[in-house]
Image (tube, rainbow, N blue to C red; front, side, top):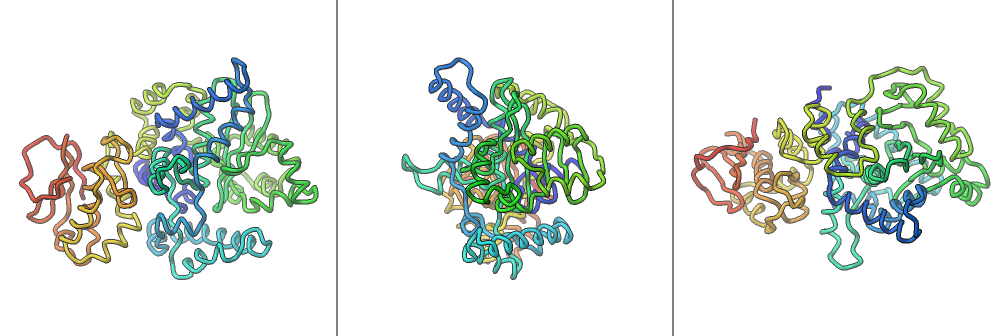
Length: 476
């Protein structure tokens, strides 16, 4: 896969992208480090821990616990039925065409097996999973899309504005990426390593402090140190650590570290032997047993793969303590790996902004909406109904996907141009689509051109395209 193809996957990755390309998580983590809001949260956490301890240097485990508490307190984790309501559904036929039948069906097989186990063991009530199971039967799956930190926070607009309203909506991948990014902002000498333990159904963070203390961030409401895990084992599994793990993550099949992924099923690994051994040792220390899932992976013949190109940047930015260092490293680098992080961050300061248009065409809610429309006038009415004029990022140099503009009811001229563009393309039997649609983004205004028409954004008036420098051109 070329860097450009992979970059396209990171713009608005869904659950099947994450299964096909697990290293996407690394790019989400560094994209989060570009968020000034994430650094503000980190500063708040560190100041609170220092104030409560009365010390000048915070205890590493206390800091890790404070990160988990902040995530748990600040964000709402969507259940599977809510995902469908908020984000829509993924068309499995289209996903098979995009990613390949083998990849999508392998992910679905593991997801379905996990659902059946959860129902059989009573871990999750059948009625909670029934909407997803019924959707799969007709070729639809809840649209789990994974977001950078600023988009996670933008979702707070959907939850009300009271003092008790959460700061955003998350999935397990979002929570892991936020947790890992916040861990990377802690002072040098705090965190030694952070990896992810993953399955098609769940993503978690595992790591250890510089003093060797391991911990497991299972999700926003659960953080285990060794003594917490042992208590859970005794309480929920009669002292059987393997059974206790099976109850929460029976299908764990991958470890993702700064170097890339170790896949238990295939044996493919970007991780060197000594790093795998170190992770296994720390997992044994926390869980109190060599997990069957891990041992099965270790028993397979290894297929060594090169480290992920982002690896040196992840290592160098651990404990960077300064967003300026992150920005300088990622935004000024000529390395394609760093530019891919910018696509995840949704920066328009990239070499091929047309990748945003390609990603936008796969957004499920805008695609479904277009099928209910029949004329250009109806499309314009939809965009006119987006009354907000502010970017959800509060930054016109970043771009939102069409479904996000619809969901939040706001968008810059550039966001609305992208929404108008894809709605016109999706419009059934549209003369506009047949003629080809082009979006022209200029320094202060945007335009969408099709046939003999040029529509100015945000006014939605038909105009003559001005003779001004074009900043970005989106189209085939």
